[in-house]
Length: 380
Image: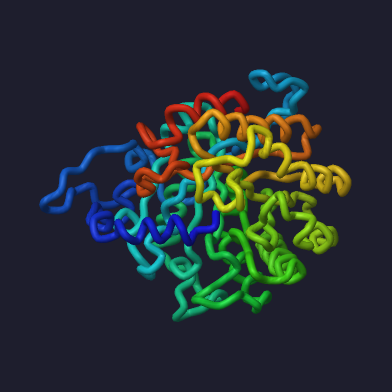
């Protein structure tokens, strides 16, 4: 998502939101004592189940895609990965390093219960590799332990955990141009999770205002780093222009990414798509009831022409008749592309979105009542 809108709204709430249980109080092990003057409510049971380390148990392989129907959408190939973005660990990004549960937090159980199986977990690079040591430096032990806790909880439930630096191809305020350091970063991080086959590596969220060739070079360095660790799990790569599906070809990503290589041949092209007029995810109005399929058409053609696999890592829209139809048109279109699209994730879950119209945080955020049952669950 183009985060300026949502982040600005969030920052206005920080004075009240940062008062809370510290150190993974909601996302894993740590304090469960409520701060003085507050009332605390148990949201889920992550703390009682998480172990704090990467799972070493043999995990089931990704389910094979099946063909059938999704509601009124016929002739479909069902998604392998379907779920939500758990936007939490990148929040409070003016507070570095920050404390999860105080400056950022998250929730999981509700969606597992609904049959969703994939959770994209954004984090800030500056918290995992602080500017004092740099991108290629040692991983911060506290932040890494917290990330492992929530990942292990997800994968232990049989879900897929997609970890991704939510940095827009920036680090410490500057565009990342040191590809060697970025490769080292991903080699170090993947080494921590390579034993858990249900972990997916999403190399970088939404590069923007850089050339497509630069985005491709950054992603190639990340692929090289992951594979150098010995990890064999899927890797998500994202392109420039906010990795938009509707601009995948016109932005130059289509040409720049054709030559990307992976010795495991296990790379998936992640794109994002919003359905408002400028594709930013900042308006509850959708252009039309068919805009979802229309905005994905060129990307679908590229995937099939180049024998690639794609995943819609972010999609969002308003809870109204036209937008619900538009989301359904997007997901139906994707599932009718013969397996070219392997999954889709809604933006976004997470308890700090308040009344943001795309929030799908249980039990009663705006997208729960209609978007979830009408537009998403028929395609799981």
